[in-house]
Image (tube, rainbow, N blue to C red; front, side, top):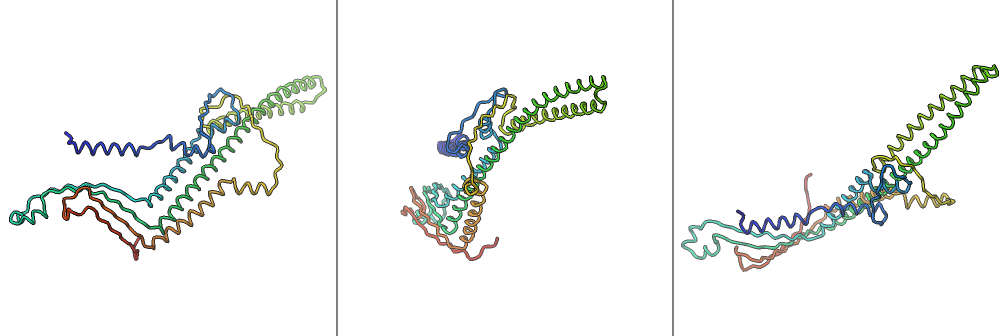
Length: 338
């Protein structure tokens, strides 16, 4: 049977476990906020037989693609590392009650002073606060974590751009293959009619047998191209379904993309590249992170300061009339083998 103290400790443990629970929905919304450029991410309903526009295909890919989710989780890890680096500047507070029970000493039986200094049981309730100051190491470490977070954010956006390009390329390839199938079907009808006409002319002596062979060869070539085009449509739709994260894409592709006509100049395109190419941004942030990490490594050679303050809510150990203690410790690194 649990005692009241044990019940209290168990309740505190459950409280802190609940406070430390992971809110997965909130975490997902963090990188969805980045992928949707500040707009709230909404799940688009889709059925395999529905018509699919390019815009809806891009939205579905942005929402359901597993590669985007993996990149988003990597971005969340860098944000967590940044929070951990910032936590190095925060003090730690602990509450460590101590209860001691020991047998009576024989010396205390004849000397009441000894019995007063060495009681057989004591209870101390200290609240301790500790803070480590290592600015030459922790400040560059925080800058490193921040640069890595920006780098991973740029990587996330770069993967999104690559995914959008893959979806658009596959989408238009399927549309092209479907148009090609329709054209080849009509070409086969024309080729069959031409072959029938040449066969009639060959029987009447107007056409040569070689003309019949050429018409049959052209018909067989067109039929082979039709088989290949149908296979391209099937494979393209399967790839499109994989990219947008749906079981299948069986409905018609309706396009729906309007591209404004703009006359671009090379200087304008170069400026857009410097500001919008996320892979370049990620490379720049990686360089900043490496430089800050080097500064953090050099910071290990500089001294650090530790501040400690302890306040006793209750104290039975000697000296029991002291309510608080404090300590300032300076650590100067000289030699430490790896």
